[in-house]
Length: 503
Picture 1 (cartoon, rainbow, N blue to C red):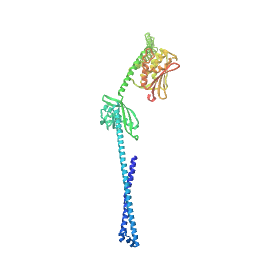
Picture 2: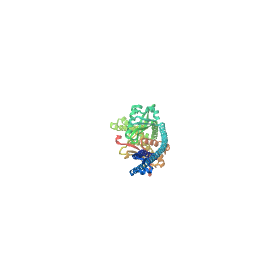
Picture 3: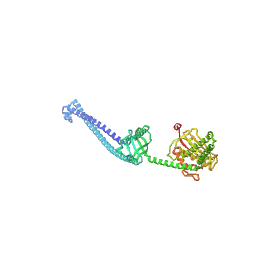
Picture 4: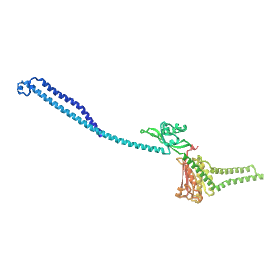
C-alpha cells in the first residue's frame, strides 16, 4: 500500500515535469531567439567601417558620438543575447536533467511496485489455493457425512425442487442425484404422499422454524414410517430460500415397540391369572354366597309348592331373591372374566372413580377375610383419563392387594385401607392407596418397582414392575412414600382429560 502511494506520487511529479519542461523549453527558446534577433538587428542596423574594424582606435576616434553610442548599444545587445542564450541552455539542461531524474525514480518505483505486486499476487494465490484446498476438504468431509449417515438428507427450494440428496436417499428410493436434482416429490413419489411432503414443507416455510413430522414413504418391502425434522435455510438477510430435511426410518423401532407392548400385555395377562389364582379362595366365597342363597330360596319355594300351602304372595319374594342372587353371582363372574380375558390393549375414556369401585369390589372378599376395611375417598370431579381400563384396573388391584398383605403381616395404624382419587389444578389425576402397615425402608421404596424385587415369600417381584410399565406407557408416574406414624402410600398420576373430552 505504501509502495503504491510512493509510485503514484512519483508518477504525479513526473507528469508535472513532463508538462512544465516543454513550456520551459518554449520560453527559453523564445528568450534565446529574442537575444539572437536583437544582436542580428543591431549588427545589421549600423553601417561603417567601425563595425567592420571594431578594434581600430583610429577608426573609432573618427566616428562621431552618435556612432559611438550605437556601437555601445550593439555590444550590450550582443552580451545580453549571449547571456540569455547561455541562461536558456542552462535552464533547459536543468529541466531535462530533472525530468530524467524523475523518470528514473518513477521507473525505479514502478519496478519495485511491480515486484511487490508480484509478491502480493503470489501470496494471495497461495492463500487462495490453501483456502480452496480447505474448502474442498470440508466439502468432501460434509459429503462423506451426508453419504454415510443412515438418515435420508435432502434440500429443496421454495418450489419443492430438489437441490441436494445424499446416497441414502438414492439407495432407498432408487433414484440418482442427476435424476432427482431439479425434480419435485410429485416426480418421485405417489401423489398422495407427495401432497403430504409438500404440505409439511410449506408449513416449515410459513413458520420459519424447525418442525418434526411423521411421514410415510414406499420401499420395496412395503411402506416405511419416517420421523422427519425439517428446517428452513436462510441467506445473509434472513430470507428463506430452501428447506432441509433429515428423515430417519423408525419402522423397525415401531415394530420392536409393538412387540414389546405385546410381550408386556402377555406378561400382564399372566400376572392377572396369578392374581386370580391368589384370589381363588375369596372368589369361591364370593360365588358360593349367592349360590347358597339361591339354593335356600329354591328349597323354600319347592317346599311351599309341594305342600300346596304356598301362595303367589309367599313364593314371589323367594323368586325375586333367587333372581337377585343369581345376578350378583353373574356380576362377579363377569368382572372376573373381563379381568382375566386376553386381548389387545385398547384405550378409551375411563372414569377413575368407577374403575376404583370395580377393582375394590374384586378385592372386598379378600379384605374381609383378613379383617381389612376398604374405604374409598373419591373425587367429586369424577376424573377421567384416556387409558386401557383393564390395565389400569390391574394396577389398582395390585396396589390394593399389596396393601392388604402389608396390613396382614403388620398392622400399626388402624384397619382401614384407603383408596383415593383426586384431580389437580393442572389437570393431572391421581390415585393413591394408603395402608396401615409398618411402612417401607428408604431403600425398598426406591427399588420396589424394579423387576424381581419382592418382600413376599412366594412372590415373583413382577407385579409392581408391570404396574410401573403400564403407568409410564400411559404417560404417568408411579411412586411410594412411607409415613413416620406407620403405613405406606403408593400412588400414580396420569394426564387427565377435560370434561368436554370425556363427554
